Figure 1 (cartoon, rainbow, N blue to C red):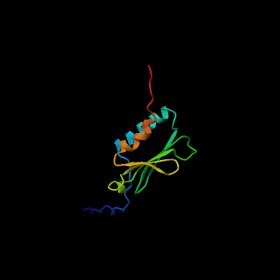
Figure 2: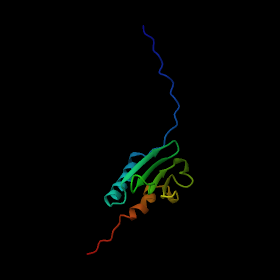
Figure 3: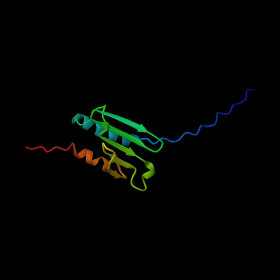
Figure 4: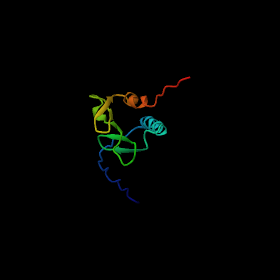
Length: 114
Protein backbone atom coordinates (compact mmCIF):
# COMPACT_ATOMS: atom_id res chain seq x y z
CA UNK A 1 0.00 0.00 0.00
CA UNK A 2 0.95 3.61 -0.42
CA UNK A 3 1.60 5.88 2.48
CA UNK A 4 -0.05 9.28 2.94
CA UNK A 5 2.33 12.19 3.08
CA UNK A 6 1.12 15.07 5.25
CA UNK A 7 0.69 18.43 3.61
CA UNK A 8 3.52 20.85 4.48
CA UNK A 9 2.97 23.02 7.51
CA UNK A 10 1.26 26.32 6.85
CA UNK A 11 3.65 29.21 6.47
CA UNK A 12 2.69 32.02 8.81
CA UNK A 13 1.99 35.08 6.74
CA UNK A 14 0.82 38.34 8.18
CA UNK A 15 -2.79 39.04 7.40
CA UNK A 16 -3.20 41.90 4.95
CA UNK A 17 -5.89 44.53 5.44
CA UNK A 18 -8.13 44.95 2.40
CA UNK A 19 -11.43 46.47 1.36
CA UNK A 20 -14.43 44.18 1.27
CA UNK A 21 -16.65 44.09 -1.80
CA UNK A 22 -19.22 46.63 -0.57
CA UNK A 23 -16.55 49.12 0.56
CA UNK A 24 -14.66 48.86 -2.72
CA UNK A 25 -17.88 49.24 -4.70
CA UNK A 26 -18.71 52.44 -2.79
CA UNK A 27 -15.21 53.87 -3.30
CA UNK A 28 -15.09 53.00 -7.01
CA UNK A 29 -18.58 54.43 -7.54
CA UNK A 30 -17.38 57.75 -6.11
CA UNK A 31 -14.21 57.51 -8.21
CA UNK A 32 -16.24 56.98 -11.39
CA UNK A 33 -18.43 59.99 -10.69
CA UNK A 34 -15.38 62.16 -9.95
CA UNK A 35 -13.76 61.04 -13.23
CA UNK A 36 -16.96 61.87 -15.13
CA UNK A 37 -16.97 65.33 -13.50
CA UNK A 38 -13.34 65.87 -14.56
CA UNK A 39 -11.81 65.99 -11.06
CA UNK A 40 -9.76 62.77 -11.07
CA UNK A 41 -7.90 60.81 -13.74
CA UNK A 42 -6.07 57.95 -12.03
CA UNK A 43 -6.06 55.88 -8.86
CA UNK A 44 -3.85 53.49 -6.92
CA UNK A 45 -4.48 50.99 -4.16
CA UNK A 46 -2.06 49.82 -1.48
CA UNK A 47 -2.55 46.88 0.87
CA UNK A 48 -0.32 46.34 3.92
CA UNK A 49 -0.58 44.35 7.16
CA UNK A 50 -2.04 47.35 9.04
CA UNK A 51 -3.48 49.56 6.28
CA UNK A 52 -5.52 49.52 3.08
CA UNK A 53 -5.34 52.72 1.05
CA UNK A 54 -7.10 54.07 -2.05
CA UNK A 55 -5.41 57.12 -3.59
CA UNK A 56 -7.02 59.34 -6.25
CA UNK A 57 -4.93 61.52 -8.56
CA UNK A 58 -5.67 64.57 -10.69
CA UNK A 59 -2.80 63.45 -12.93
CA UNK A 60 -0.77 60.29 -12.58
CA UNK A 61 2.57 62.09 -12.11
CA UNK A 62 1.44 64.10 -9.07
CA UNK A 63 0.85 63.34 -5.43
CA UNK A 64 -2.60 61.91 -4.74
CA UNK A 65 -5.28 64.54 -4.22
CA UNK A 66 -6.88 62.39 -1.53
CA UNK A 67 -6.33 59.04 0.15
CA UNK A 68 -9.03 56.92 1.71
CA UNK A 69 -7.44 54.77 4.40
CA UNK A 70 -8.78 51.83 6.34
CA UNK A 71 -6.96 50.98 9.57
CA UNK A 72 -8.88 48.33 11.55
CA UNK A 73 -6.56 48.75 14.54
CA UNK A 74 -8.05 52.24 15.14
CA UNK A 75 -11.73 51.25 14.86
CA UNK A 76 -12.33 51.38 18.62
CA UNK A 77 -10.34 54.59 19.11
CA UNK A 78 -10.62 57.17 16.34
CA UNK A 79 -12.44 55.17 13.69
CA UNK A 80 -11.16 52.74 11.08
CA UNK A 81 -11.66 55.16 8.16
CA UNK A 82 -9.71 58.31 7.36
CA UNK A 83 -9.76 60.82 4.53
CA UNK A 84 -6.23 62.18 4.05
CA UNK A 85 -5.50 65.31 2.01
CA UNK A 86 -2.79 65.98 -0.54
CA UNK A 87 -0.25 67.16 2.05
CA UNK A 88 -0.91 64.39 4.59
CA UNK A 89 -3.41 66.16 6.83
CA UNK A 90 -6.32 64.04 8.05
CA UNK A 91 -9.44 65.79 6.74
CA UNK A 92 -12.05 63.46 8.21
CA UNK A 93 -12.02 60.38 10.42
CA UNK A 94 -14.87 58.09 11.37
CA UNK A 95 -16.41 54.70 11.99
CA UNK A 96 -18.41 54.54 8.75
CA UNK A 97 -17.17 54.88 5.18
CA UNK A 98 -20.20 56.92 4.06
CA UNK A 99 -19.57 59.66 6.60
CA UNK A 100 -15.90 59.89 5.65
CA UNK A 101 -16.73 60.14 1.92
CA UNK A 102 -19.37 62.85 2.45
CA UNK A 103 -17.02 65.85 1.88
CA UNK A 104 -15.99 64.39 -1.48
CA UNK A 105 -19.58 63.68 -2.52
CA UNK A 106 -20.52 67.30 -1.79
CA UNK A 107 -18.22 68.39 -4.62
CA UNK A 108 -20.52 66.60 -7.06
CA UNK A 109 -23.70 68.37 -5.99
CA UNK A 110 -24.66 71.09 -8.46
CA UNK A 111 -27.45 73.60 -8.27
CA UNK A 112 -29.93 73.16 -11.09
CA UNK A 113 -32.01 76.21 -11.95
CA UNK A 114 -35.23 76.37 -13.96
